[in-house]
Amino acid sequence: MNKIKKIVKIYLLLLIVLIGLTSFFLPAENMQIRVYAHLKVYALQVNVNNGTYKITGDAEMIGKSAGEAVFMMTLKGDSIQLKQNDVIKGTYI
Image (tube, rainbow, N blue to C red; front, side):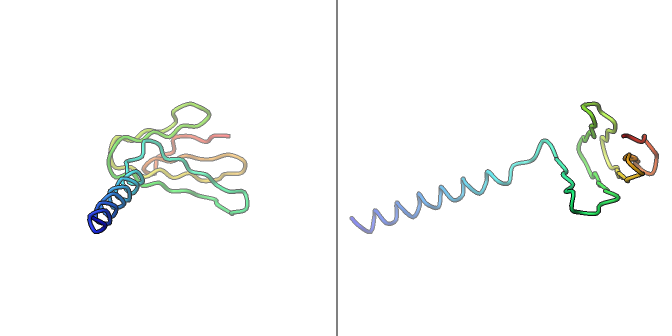
């Protein structure tokens, strides 16, 4: 009887571990990038392979990709310049 209880406990723990691990591997809807003040970051490049991605700033859409794209955000003075596939989309304060 004790052996059966141990086997049941092992299967339950295995099931709980598997359920716990799958919750960390679900696809993400939003990607958030945070730049910390103590780092000297002057440019950020985001490579998009597939899917639909939108870049928003000040609650407005400023860039969109429905396929392969390279977004480059570069610090220019006190503004950020956004390029999509080497085409300047704009400079934002």
